[in-house]
Amino acid sequence: MMLRLFNTLTRSVDTFETIEPGKVRLYTCGPTVYNFAHIGNLRTYVFEDILKRSLCFLGYTVNHVMNVTDVGHLVSDADTGEDKMEMGAQREGKSVWDIAEYYFQVFRRHMDMLNLLEPDLWCKATDHIAEQIDLVRALEQKGYTYTLADGIYYDTSKFADYGRLARLDRDGLMAGARIEMVEGKRHPTDFALWKFSPHDKKRMMEWDSPWGVGFPGWHSECCAMAMKYLGDEIDIHCGGIDHIAVHHTNEIAQSEAVTGKQWARFWMHGEFLVMAKEGPDDNERMSKSSGNFITLDTLVEQGYDPLVYRYFCLNAHYRSPLTFSWEALDGAVNAYQRLKAHVIELGSQMCAAEEASHIHLDQFRAALEDDLNMPRALSVMWSLVRDPNVSGPVKMATLRAMDPVLGFNIEAMKRTELELDQDIQQLVCQREDARKARDFGQADLIRAELLARGYVIEDSPEGPRLKRSSPCN
Ligand code: AMP
Ligand code: ZN
Image (tube, rainbow, N blue to C red):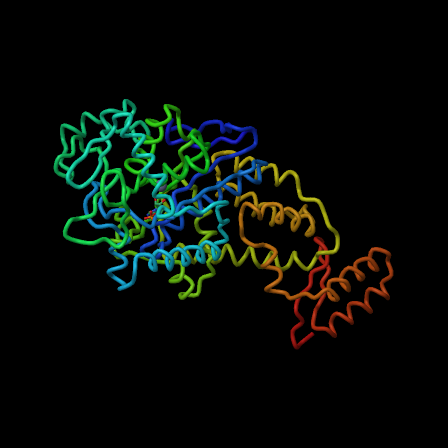
């Protein structure tokens, strides 16, 4: 089977083909580092991590670039309101640079806790001001821009295909334009490419440009950096669903206006995490402004393993909304603990390096190839773990083969729960060899030796199992 992925551009599950054989150029919109990422934001990064891990599992080489938004993201999508970064700095009485560095490092720590692979390249908006200016200049030369009192704007009526990604009805938008508008904006969808610093206030972050001192618009950074590091044509561009209508639509309008080529082949978007509320139809998006704001550290303070949250996310398809409640999270705790218990039990049967179960691995691969169907991949994992016809070592080998995608740290589960030293493992193997050679005297001697060291060995149809001995043994 071929990998098939849902493409927001076509609204269908399409066969994935790369520009360069075997290589994927992947760009994922990164965090705006003015506050903690909440677990809703993190759900999107878990989806992107699964995408990247699945691509690697399926044999692709992935070049993954992620940005860090440390300037220019205004509170409102309509190019009004304050810069989120400057707001964060005021709130905490720190410099914008300190805020950016602090929250970026927290974000990386959270990525690590969730076992999210880091991108091959991080790029910060503030390190790429020149590239953004060049992009705006190129748009200006091609006649896509106009100047207002507060900045340089993109004239969306000049880009014939504007809004294709979001299926925007431009005429409808024009007729019923009620959204908050910057004075002089020609069309409601026009957006700022470069904003001028206010005359009466010095911004903490501002730069010279051919148009005056100011700062770049948020939609230019991803465009300029992704094109710099991945090229004029890329394979996949990702983000959360809220990015479809404005941010990604405006990225396309810039890159494709400049190059005349289709920019990203696949646009992939993760659905939102919503907060469960009283009524069944009363769910609410988790957002920083609503006060419904839970971070990964909150979960840890409540006693949850961060990887339980990873499991929780994998249990829903990335294109389905996921409702967060503590009860639902407890469901993931149970499942994750059961998995851990199985792994620990299986981990004590580590004599032979067995091959993985190809039947299960094939089913697992098929689930990934079917638009990253992780709930199905997890159910394949559980059918493996529960299959009485698969031996313990084969189960372990298969779980190990699945873990590069699942990212549950299967190896660490074994190590932390049962600190088996080399000697103990060797004794288990020697006893297994003795038993197979029907040298039961020797096998019993080794069993006694293990007991003296605090381990009980039990034989099961799946192989020997090791447990810590209780005072009664
Ligand atoms: P931000 O740091 O605000 O730019 O957001 C980071 C990422 O989180 C973006 O890809 C958003 O689309 C995504 N996002 C924001 N809110 C949620 C949510 N409640 N659930 C899932 N993803 C979200
Ligand atoms: Zn972006």
